[in-house]
Every structure is written in structure tokens, then in C-alpha cells.
Amino acid sequence: MSSRLLNYLPALYRTDPFIGQFLLAFEKVLLGIEDTVEYPYPGLETTISRLATLFDPQQTPEAFLSWLASWTALSLRADLPVTVQRDFIANIVQRYRFRGTKANLQVLLSLFTRGQPTVTEMTVDEFQIGVHSSLGEDTYLQGGSPHFFRVTIALPQDLAGKPQELARQLAIARNIIDLEKPAHTDYELIPIFPSTLQIGVAANLGIDTLLGSLPTEINIGS
Image (cartoon, rainbow, N blue to C red; front, top):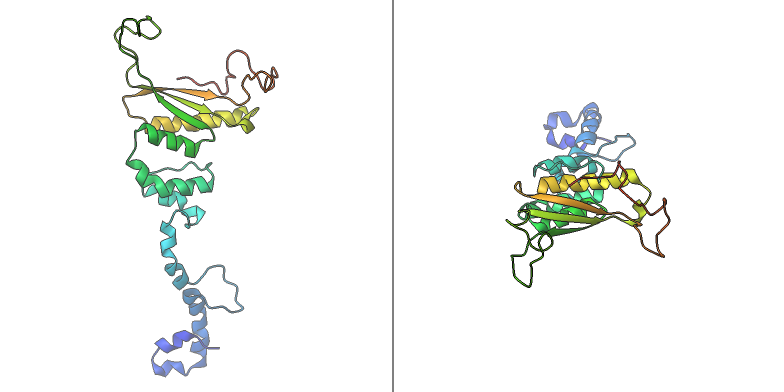
């Protein structure tokens, strides 16, 4: 069998059987011909024809995800599921339009953590006699804490009894909030741990119910 590449050579060389065999190796690399020789890569022609898939978050090889994310100045966490990474890269440009907003923060927390997040902007009602007039409860002299919000995350039931995974989820949440929130704002992160006290549902002291402070390995501050 002679190489198809002979057709691109001057007629003088097409009659030489050695050249026809010699060019088969180049045809294997360039065009990816099917023969009995084992070669782990597709031909360069095939690779080039598939080049557009490298820029598609849903089709690009897993090894290219971090490279593709770098195009939008994004650093992916290596411990995130591949499907989550693909979905996030596919929507990152649209998400940048809403950066720093409550809605965007809630979407990011939903994508990157396994909990159900709720973001609440804290406001203090103005002084109203007969309506808001309990000092220290619903009335604050000189106003309340400005530019403050609260994030509550209800963690899933299957994380009960896994303090390291709980701590990891909270670390991810705090990292996202710190990167996403406006610089002048402050916040409080409140986790709702699985199997908290529910009479008749989950109330086994020392197993799925804790009295007192949180374990030190998963205790977090504001």
C-alpha cells in the first residue's frame, strides 16, 4: 500500500515504491490513517478539526478546564465535581455582570456548596413611636450596623457526623462570600447543621444532637 501523500509530489517521485511506503508514517501522524500500527493519538488533521471543542466548557477535556477558566480570570477549586466546573465556566461571563449582588452571591453558593443558602440584607427600622420603640430590640440609637448582611446555609442530612466535610463546606462558602461581597460590606455566616434538635425526629444526645458550643474544628466566626 502506498501513501496518499504521493499525489502531492512531483511525478518523478510517484513511481518509487520506497517513497510510497516511507510516507505512510507521515500520513499516520498527519491524517490518522487506519492500519495495523498502534498510535495513541488521532491524526493532526482530526485534532485541528476538533479545535472548537476546546473552547466549549461542556466538551473540552477535563485537563483543559482550568486553562479555559483562566480566560475569565477564574481559578477553579480542584475538589469541585467536573460537572459543576463545566456549568460554572459556561455561565461565568453572565455572572460577572451581576457581581456583588445578593442574587449572584446566592447563585454562587448554590453552585459551589452542598447546602441551601439564604442571603438576608440586614436593615434597621427607623424610630416610630408606638411601632418601633423597644431600645436594643427594634430601635437603635445612631442606627444599626451599616452595610451588613447575613448568610444562612442549611447543610444536607448526609453530612451529619462528618465534621471535616462540614468544615470544608463552610470554608468554601466563606471563600466565595469574601471574593464576591462588596469591599465595604461585612457579613455573618450561620450554618444550619444537619440533624439539629427536632423532638421526635433527631434528638439523640451526642449522636445527632449537640448541646453547647460547636466543635472547634467546625466552629466559625463572623
